[in-house]
Length: 168
Image (cartoon, rainbow, N blue to C red; front, side, top):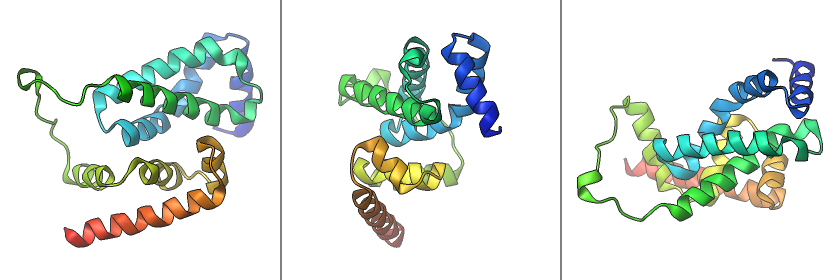
């Protein structure tokens, strides 16, 4: 979708047009999923975070100051919702409620395992940089840290992933 079309959708969504808002959310669903799964590492919690984010965005769309930062604003709300879910999540699951993981292809399973091995401070910048194509400056603004901190976290994350795959 072209940038002008996206800006038009954002403007309409701010004017409370439900169709424009729905189209926007459909455009960013994959991005939201990638960020949420990087933080929560759980499909059910990820779905909850995305649903909560969509609701929050609809309720708060009027607070968006600059339309060009819509995606950053959306992802920031999502990250906050993910942290809230993690705080509420219990550290254990009773044995009777345990469900084995769904069948996945080996690539996704291997990638999830590798990402799980990373600390969150490395995992999130790596997902945003490599998975979404964000620039280090954009990630720094989103996470409220300096650009050099993001560059360091990316370098260390790559080193940790390389070490993980060398072990395998």
